[in-house]
Length: 228
Image (cartoon, rainbow, N blue to C red; front, top):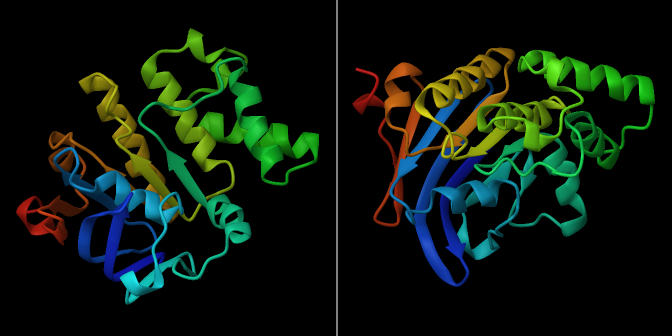
């Protein structure tokens, strides 16, 4: 099990946005989290990579990639995040650096030193997302869909066990959004799990997966409502 939450409370500032959270993710699973704005989707994802804390009193169990999040220390968080891929709605690319430089920055920050290995890995992930020819472009020269593909490539650099994607199609047109979700779905075939928050309900029929819904400060699995 990559993620195992049992009876977890999720706080945003001092307000509990989700209670009694039971959630789990295993290798190769494709998981949607749906719900209205402010229902706790993003907050739940942020707990997984320790952007938001989970206190010991607020969980029976909160384990991600073998780490107990109620006891994790600040210095241990970079190692946890190195085993994850994180994708944001607004891409969060460095706009004064090329695609190649953006990806090299991440590899160097996570301990890669050998230039040949760095170049090879960058070419591999860009090939995986169909963006190798954009290697030397600046983010401003790319469309929104292309920037999101680069963000996905960035998330793949350290061969993550799980990708956490917060509204990855939120700023994209319908056709581009479909292509991005198809790419994320394809990634799960390698064994990497994908946990994705989305408002794009049409995707749930096109690309079936496990579905959780955040509503009224709670989260519940509603997969059967979509995979009939």
